[in-house]
Amino acid sequence: MAAQIDPAERLLNLVIALVNTPGRMTKEQVRRSVAGYADAPTDDAFERMFERDKDTLRELGVPVLTVTDPRHGDDIGYRVDPDAYALPPVQLTAGELGVLALAAQLWQDRSLRTDSSRALTKLRAVGEAPEASDLVAGLAPRVRAGGDAFGPLLDAVQARQAVRFVYRAATTGEVRAREVEPWRLLARRGGWVLVGRDRHRSATRSFRLSRIEGTVRPVGEPGAFPPPAPAELDEALATWTAGTERLAALAVLPERAGAARARAVVPDDDTPAPPDLTDVPGVERLLATRDLVHVPYRSTHELAEELVAYGDAVVVLGPPELRAAVLRLLRTAATLGGGGDDA
Image (cartoon, rainbow, N blue to C red):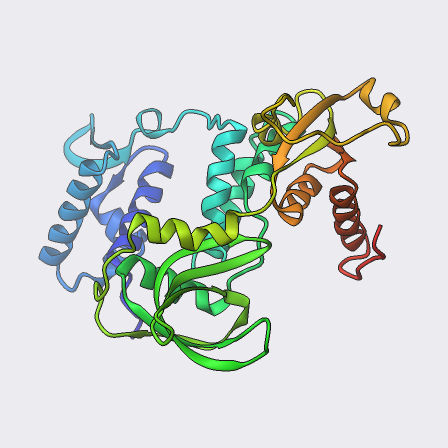
């Protein structure tokens, strides 16, 4: 015996059928050709199912029209008005695509991975020019997947439920069980990080998801611990935002790298000193066709990952360590992950 079709799938099947019918569909045609309605065991059960579905669609804003045959007034059919139901052309700015890219990045570790990737690809395709992807590159976090730990930890953060997992320490290599009250998940320095309170140490700690081994298991009931105080959370996050602020000097093609330009500053007494470009080869030639843009940053690796995504739209002029980091990433990409020598 075939499995019954889920009601939501049946509704979708009905919408597709009524949108694509050349004229109208009678109840008999719906029962015979739309998947899901054959599950009704009797005529009365089908009538109730169809009427309920029709009302649900109208409540959702789907314009289901009742159509009669002028030759036979009692012959009633149904269709969806395509003009009333059609969406206007999708016109998304690069910034709006960037926000969607952020959400899709989160979905990569969850059950919506395939659907979100396909949808984002279709939305990016509506961009009017290649530079429309620049802001997406600047906004979307380029981080490695959080693996199987990501989903349970995200649920635990939202539910304020403690978790237990096995963790391998970066400094000592020690592997031990940890019990943590999870506060935040952060995309930092190329990967996902959990910030929370380690119950065994009675202190705030950070855990890279890539160092979690095995399964993350919930402990106790949801809502078992209060949210951290603002000062406590700020102190915990300071580890990932601290560092000396510096200025990057970038040669940027006109109207490109919008996200980087949005953070640009004009060097003055209130900003760090810009890099000295005196000895940079070809700087005058580059700046003849490009804009000189100064962007403040703290993490060399994070900014390098962003700048690589802009391709040839951005050339790093300085500092030397940022330029070297970008070159390393480009060489790695060119060798399909084979790595390259330090610049």
